[in-house]
Amino acid sequence: MSRSNDASRDAEEIAAYYARGLERDRLAGGAGALEYARTQALLERYLPAPPAVIVDVGGGPGRYAVWLAERGYRVHLVDPVPLHVEQARATADGRRGVTLASAEVGDARALRLPDASADAVLLLGPLYHLPERAERLQALAEARRVCRRGGVIIAAAIPRFASTLDGLRGGYLEDPAFAAVAAGDRRDGRHRNPTGDPAYFTTAYFHRPEDLAVECSAAGLAHEATLAVEGAGWLLPDLDARLADERRRAVLLAALAPLEAEPTLLGVSAHLLTVARRA
Image (cartoon, rainbow, N blue to C red; front, top):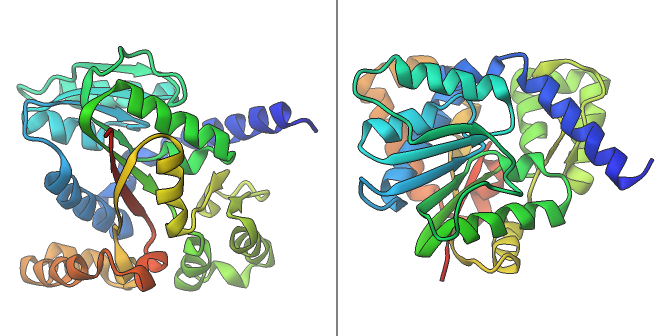
């Protein structure tokens, strides 16, 4: 099969996975809720003050876009999944006084936005759904193109060992099919799910943490930091209870923050955020 056929197959599998609608509530509980809380904290740290213009590429059903719009940012959401764009618009419409600057179906590799039109660009998904390095560099280069000089690009990645750790946490490694998937991830970072079970995710690329700075540099960006989002916290069995209790939530988040940049622990997290700038 040719590379173009492989890419077409990958795109179809990813589209079918997200068409299930699972993404809308993924950040509402468990490890997803921790991911959301920690990502919010990191975005608050690195984003310029409102009313800056933010392009949320791969913004899904709009959880971050709507939150940012509520805070006074002018947010353009772009996502390849029509259902996600519809959900984002509906969520924004349901919030009094909240408006997205735009929400449209689009491709991270070819944004329909003018040069230097944004103060910040978020890529909280595209990098791990582009298995080919050239396509990831293309997405980063597009983010650079639409970002103003000195603006920030914040991109999410999944570490190479996430599936193995998730398999231990959830018992998935007891399934030989998932064990084979995780072994492939450890070998080359190319996550393939031949089972059709959505619990085993969809076609993706899992990074080694150190590779993110290299890819940013290759795309003409000045890498600033690579940070663990959840750290080891996502492996805790009682996350919902911890996050629901104000005191325990504060203890958890305070414990994760000073470890977020520790190189020896980056690969334990379920997600990474890499921060770069258009120099």
